[in-house]
Length: 294
Image (tube, rainbow, N blue to C red; front, side, top):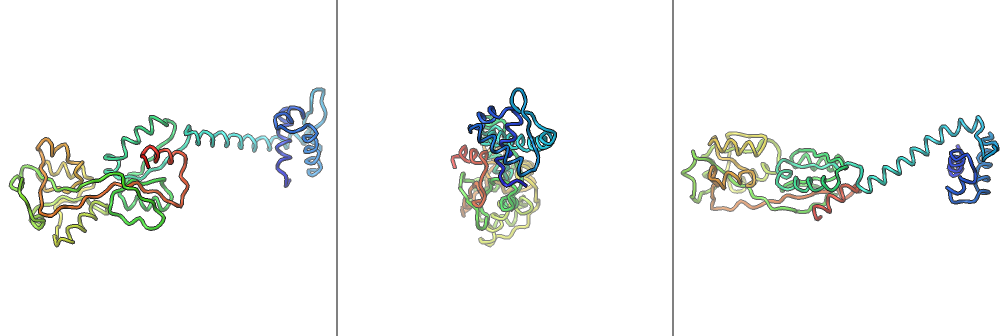
């Protein structure tokens, strides 16, 4: 294989133009330099690549064969450069984000709408998953960034920025009206039918830990996949639901649900944007972070 790839570049331009002088002009070098590169390539390959024509040069049979392969390579390089330029100019590309239902609905969605309006050619892929799975996807380089809720153990190599405060509440419907406007002990939850999220989520882990620290032991009546469903069960008075306040806001404001009050404050949590410090973010991901003011 020829060590000096510049020879192939000169050959490509000369063959495409059919003229050494045009190739020299396009390459911004002298015509003697073009001729010298062609001679060096012919010597190393042991084949004559050009013959003189009435106007410029013409490929020999050997030159035609070689040009068919060299042209494909250089055209792919040029195409790659064009695509890279489009990506850097945010005219092309993808961004992969991990987010839960909660972080997507109550933080990220308006920003994604603005990002799409500003960069309509960027494909946005959102992996909807709870916080532990999102963090694992970030470690595995399956996503560019994650939007998760505390608490979580991200491990080493992650950069975390708090972007919004959130609050967990217990909500109930008319069947539990006797508890409205009362200051309750947390232990009274043990006597109520409780509706929790199922599985391993930061919300469930947080509430389980908080209650255990306060010596409250609960066996949920229902364990559901989404907070929206918890609200729907609470509206039908099937139990007392534990959700992030935003999910129940509409129903708390119109009186269809009420919030239980306790003599111990449930500490607030945060939505966080998390990135892997070991990875170089794409131009699309960097611009989304700028849109998030991060």
